Each structure stands twice: as structure tokens, then as C-alpha cells.
Length: 297
Image (cartoon, rainbow, N blue to C red):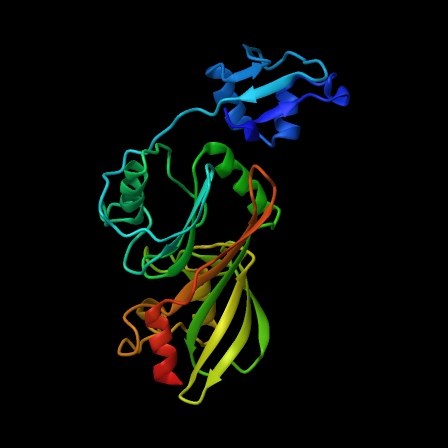
């Protein structure tokens, strides 16, 4: 067992049951604790224990995470790895692929490509997407390899420790150098595909900063998300009169310049769920957006 899932009991820990130590010292969620309990997957100095037991100073708690494996059909879809360790996988997502199978896209998804990538390496884990990107959005996509990672990232998201930065080319000249769009987003009653700014929608906050304005009537902006609603950037920028170039769903026509919405998830910053090290993932601007900037420059 990897020592990242081990803990040496200290003197001040001896009054706490093992269950509390796992929650406080290793950050294990209540949901995962139930799985560990049901599977007898917690050991104290090599012997199986009950989670209500207490340990002595110097004893070693070892946690064996449940073995799980996704069942997606493996497909030869290119996977560009940015970062990988036993717990996490970060990739640079290409355009034209949905993240996981849906009714409308039952196969040929990023999940299918990841399944082949995993099996080719002789690995087996359940694919858990930490962030989601639209079909035609490129950039950093993060995958957790176990339920502890997924639970920890949910906690980080609630605490605002995950930072997502995007680049987009929008129609029109954005006049303010920087600003914040704080408008609720929801699903209109008469439209199942689009999202919109509606009064009873979910709180949604997008910060933007102008990187460059182009004489031909376009602006390159950097965007920082405080929330992660479906289509959030696309909806917010369209609502203030600056839809993303190529985003036909939200009024950003100009498909002759680029065949998709010009939106790229450039950076993702977070705490590693095990080591607590602050990590930064970066995906360079894709070629089609470089060509777009050249055409409008």
C-alpha cells in the first residue's frame, strides 16, 4: 500500500476513534468511510480493525481504497497528457468531443479514449471528471482516479480553492479593461439546450479582463470563474453583448473564422487531494485559436 494513504498515530490522537482520525488527518469523506467500513479496508499495524476503535501513539493506520474500474468501451481517441500521478490525470482536451457518453453521443467521447489509454497502461480505475468542458471547448480537463479525490475536489470547490481560467475571443470591442458579471443562470422553460440569465437561476459569477482589442471588432479576454454553471461563460458574455466568436448557439456567428466557439480552458489551479501541494495545470492555446487571432489581427 502506498504510504500516502497511511497515518502514524500521534500522542494527541489517542483519544479519537480511528473514524475521526481518517476524517481529520486524511480528509476522508463520510461516503468513503462507509465503503471502507463495509469492505474492511482499514488496518492498524497490519490487522483489520473496526472504525470505532482507538489506536496508540506510534501505530500505523493503513487505508486500502476500494478497487473500481469504469466500463466504457475503449476507443482510439488521442489523449494528450499534461500531468499524471497515482491519483490524478490532467489532459489537454481537443475540440469536437463530448466528455462522457450521453443519449445523443453514446460513443466516441473523451471517456472512451481514456478507457483505452488506461487499459493500454495496464491500469484500472473509475474515471471521475473533476471539471467538465463543452464539446467544442478545449483545454485542461482533470480526472480523479478514486472516490477520495472526487470528494476532496467537491470540498475544494465549495471552499473556492479551485481556480479556473479561460481565454476567449468575443465579438465587439469590450470597453472596460476588467469587470465582473454577477447574474443568475438557469434553463428556460421552453428550451432544453440553451441556458440563459433568469431571475430564479443559480448564482453565477464570471470575472473578465481584456487582453487585446482588435480593430476588426473583436476582443481577446481572459476569464476567471467563481462558479461553474453549464455554458456559464458563453451565456454571460452573450448577455453583455459580446458573444464568443463561432458560438452559434449564443449569437456568436462568424463561422468562417473558426469552426467552433473560440473558448479555451487555459489554466486550472487546485490543491492535490493527498499531498495538499498547490498544483497548476496549463494548456497552450490550440492552433485554430492561434489562426483566428492571426486572421483578426
